[in-house]
Structures are given as structure tokens and as C-alpha cells.
Picture 1: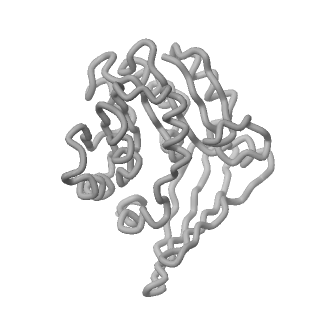
Picture 2: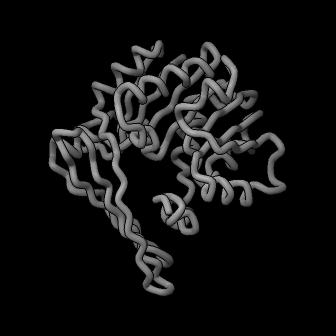
Length: 243
């Protein structure tokens, strides 16, 4: 069972809809409603469902079928302009035609599931291909400069009445890989689900270089979805760029 399959039943308890993401997208797009939106790594579809109530067309992709099935179940009977597909980040060019979308979203630290600069560059080039000109690219990952430079060992635990989700990091500098170790505790029966996945901790300068290399311009960097400037202690790294 994969990491996301094992936690899909509880995903919405761990990561409920973040309204600040929704507000960020509205500002970035100028709240123009006649837009087509592509959400990369859409998970259980919470953000897509909200976006479909605002914009003309919303498409969500995620390679994990268990997550995508939950998204489809949640969306039933809500929006005819919302579609989900079981595709990964490196399949955009084959799945969609050129200039298919006005805005492409890749939130939730999804990008660093790719394992090399070459694959991230391929994703960004494919994103440029499927975006209209002008179009918007919106990316959010963890600020890995902070994690690496300050030797951060994990992220704050997420806890509510249903679950506790602990998140630890083990960095391997020679390979430039990060072990992401998690423990999901289900409070109802005190069951634990333990996982470790590998992430590719992309630094800000490297990512910005690849975004530019892919043909994007007017690149803006934020330290959170409130559009505050990135500082050394910022936990997220948010990028907004023009196709």
C-alpha cells in the first residue's frame, strides 16, 4: 500500500481545505471567472470543488486512485464543470493539448515528489506547454532552504479530535534526498499508520532557475498564501509566475 493509499481515508482530517489557498488563487487570477484551472496533485479534491464554484472549468489530476475516488465521491452532483483524471505530473503534454488552461496550480508540496532537477524541469516545460499565453503558474512547496540550513528535523504535528499526524525529516546531503517519516494516529481506536517516503528538497534558487529556464516570466516569491515576503524562517515557499 502506498503512502497516500494508507492515509486517504483520513486525508481531509489531516489537510482540510485551506481558505488562504483559495484567496491566493482569486488574487493571482484577478478573480476573472471565465478561466480554466488545472490542479496538479489534487488529492481528495477539496480545493477543486471550491474552485469549480467560481471558475468556468476546473480539472484535477492525481496519480493515486484512492485519493481520486474520494474526490469524485465528494464532487458527485455538485459541478458539471469539474473533472478528475488519474494522471501524474509528467503526463501533462500527453494528456492535454497546448494552451488548454489559464491557470495551473501545484500546491501541497506536490512538486518535490519528483526526484531530480531534470524531472522538475520536464514538469515545468509541460506546464508552460498546456498553459495559455498569458497564463498563471502557482506552486507551493516547503521552504527547503530553511530545512537544510537550519537543520530542521520536521514540521509541526497536526492534531484535532480525530487524528494526530507527526512529521519528521531525515536529510541525506550526498544524495540530496529527504526521508519524510510520518505517524498517523487514529484517535478512535488508537491505531497508528507509519510511512516513510523520499522527497527531493529543491532549494529556492534552483527552482527559480528552472522556472525561468522553462520560459516563465514576472516571477514572484512569497513566504505564505497571505502574499507575505519570503524570509529565512518562512515554512512555505510559494511561487507565482506568468506563462
